[in-house]
Each structure stands twice: as C-alpha cells, then as structure tokens.
Image 1 (cartoon, rainbow, N blue to C red):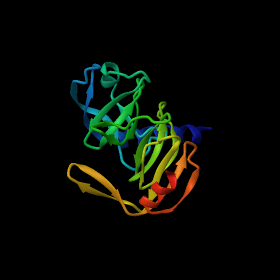
Image 2 (cartoon, rainbow, N blue to C red):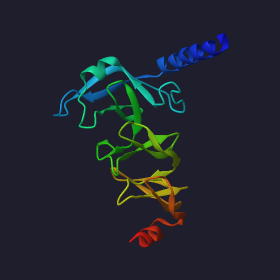
Image 3 (cartoon, helix red, strand yellow):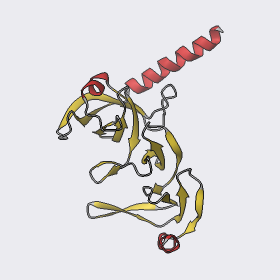
Length: 192
C-alpha cells in the first residue's frame, strides 16, 4: 500500500516539476467585447507530455480562471506562443487550432486539437473524442470530416494550404467512411 502512495505522490511531484518549467505568457479576454489582457505565467504546457492527472494538455492559472470571460458552453480561450487553448473554470485546458484569428469552431459538437503534430477532435467538456492521428483534418460538415495522412502545409500569402498526401473521410465516431486513399480532389468528387 505504501508503494502505491509513493507512486501517486511521485506522479504529482513529477507532473508539477514538468509543468512548472514550461510556463508561458498568454492573452485572454475578460469580457464579451474581446479586449485582450496579457498575463505572465498563466499557462503550464509541455508539448509531448499530457498531464496524466488531469487528462488535459495544459493547466491555466487561478487568476486567469477567475477573471476570464466564458462562453455559453462554460469555456474561455487564450492565445500563447505555443498555440491557442480552450479552458474550463477549473483550469483544465486543451490545445486547439487557430482558425479565422481565433480558436477553432465547434462543429457537430467537436473542435480540432493538435498533439505531437497530429490532428484529432475534442468535445465541449475538453474530452478527446477522436485521438490525434491525422496530419490534417477539416472541421466536421454534415457529420463528416475530410482527413489526410502524409499531407503538408504550404503558405499562400497569409493563409495555409494543405497539399499532397492521401485523403479520406471519417464520421463523428472516428470511423473511416471513405478510405484514406484518394487525392484531395478525388475525395471532393466522391463526397459531392
């Protein structure tokens, strides 16, 4: 029994040390008007290390949690040098994609997340619904998301274009409904 407690305590200490070394400044909104406020040490995040205690990607400081604006789903969002995050009032945060100068939109109840350069989906409770395993995924539309393996990003002006790779489609359960074997244009034709 003592070994069990030592393991749990070690996990908390290790997690705390890892998180403490990776604190970032962020900007967030305190009101619906979206005036952004900068805050130092507001985000604890480490790429490649998920917090096994909370199940989230990151933790948000108590000060931000108590002063942030929350949407109708009880979520706030912030911007940092390591990405855009949704977060809850309890401080649990999930990295999302930057879309249209803000956090990714929820479509079919899910938004996209990025983890170790792979894209997946999470729900409004910030729980992972579809594990990150695609190089890119479009938001869900009519219950389907177009996904790719082996594709890459190309900068076109101020936007990013996704090129190459093999494309397919998944449903909201993450099940493949169009095999990931088509070019982007072939998949578009199949889905029309």
